Length: 573
Ligand code: PRX
Image (cartoon, rainbow, N blue to C red; front, side, top):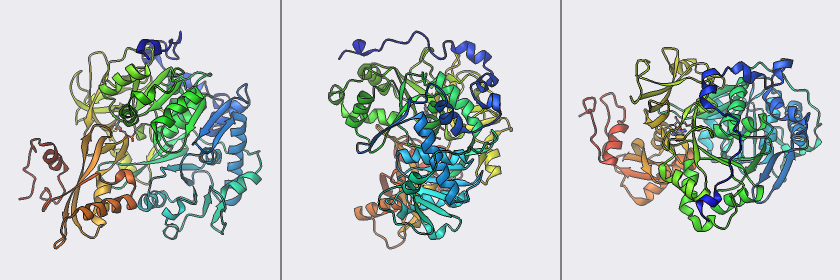
């Protein structure tokens, strides 16, 4: 098909018709008026996202289409209200979870994931969603750090939960068939079936905790980024402006709720706006993905550069077998959107892919390309109206256009993280002069206010859209009995953005071999997760270190890329 034939007729009016006007005038109080609590004072994300719609003409509108190849289900807003009430009743009657307590959900996407997550929110509980690929060490770190009381998981994954090491984990619910119950372990679906469909929602304060996402930095173990119910303001508003969702859209966000995109825009934003959402479970395959767009007539599609590159790699021969003409708006997040991907989107899908920039810590969209605004390919776009983004130098002074510096946001946007779990100093350390949230990305702004991403300031690795802290991987490598020292870097990769490469020096007497490489890789895979396991491992007799003993990742990177290593004055002899 030719590009022009595939280009969709554009709607007459966008949700954000004039970016400049909104950017100059938006006041978040206007957004508050979109919520029932503006009148009633009763706040709860789950009420706004589900129950409120069940009381309107949207009652019998589909909220959730779920399809993983085996289960194909649909739930209206009214059914979602009932199922989430049931889930809340299950939790309430068989645990002593109270407002502010932590519950984790560790399982692949399924309707029960959404029922239990929203059910817990109805109780005022803080939910930590965990990606299914996590292994024991990663699961343990998160549950113990946040002192989780309850876990919802599956029979396939429970083996990765070290129950004996988590004394405060009171109850575990298993979602699956033939569950053998014990004092600690309960069959979620059995109790769900029996539970009442009526539930009195626990009203919360806008500043009460809602969701806890663990994410990686360049140092230390993963940190728990806490978001509060107030995040709904920005999630709701940005869903209108950036995703441009309307009442008749069928929206598909490909992200798992284990990552922030899968909650902010895979649950909250779209349902706050009463939009029908498709959730596709199971593994990635180009055929299954294109089929999903065709079968459900998806109109708005939010994914990531790595996924687009994998579709690109699968070739246009496959694409031609599917009718994707329902698509109206396509968006991307998580990594730089390369020109090749933009070109592919334009030529093969007939769409300009709209880039969006934000982070786990920001809780919602920050810098984006809006449908009504001219796109400059390669730029992340302009700040969300109501958000002040800028570039600052290392002392926190704003710099002129075209000067590279730290991408920073003025403190106080509605969806801003409110805590690093259990670590107030670390939380404060994000804010330069107490005023600027410093993202860790370097960027510049051009003379028309567009932001251009340059790279990470720190050593954080973005692999296939997932954020991996080199320190975590290094720590795990050091636990391997043959490893003496390890340094981990991101190495540029055409499909995944970066891959993880580890430089390892071995203990005395240990001989390097291909089997050892495989063994070390599996060791990290089993201890952390598959996406944290180094794709490349290179043995070195000695690693470059500072005099104080810190591995110099920048030197490793320079070795790898054949670049000058820069200032080596702090390196040991
Ligand atoms: O480096 C930026 C990159 O992803 C980081 C945030 O990762 P995470 O918290 O996992 O959240 C990802 C999804 C919200 C950022 O510091 N990043 C995110 N979006 C973009 C991006 N890099 C370039 N362009 C983007 N659009």
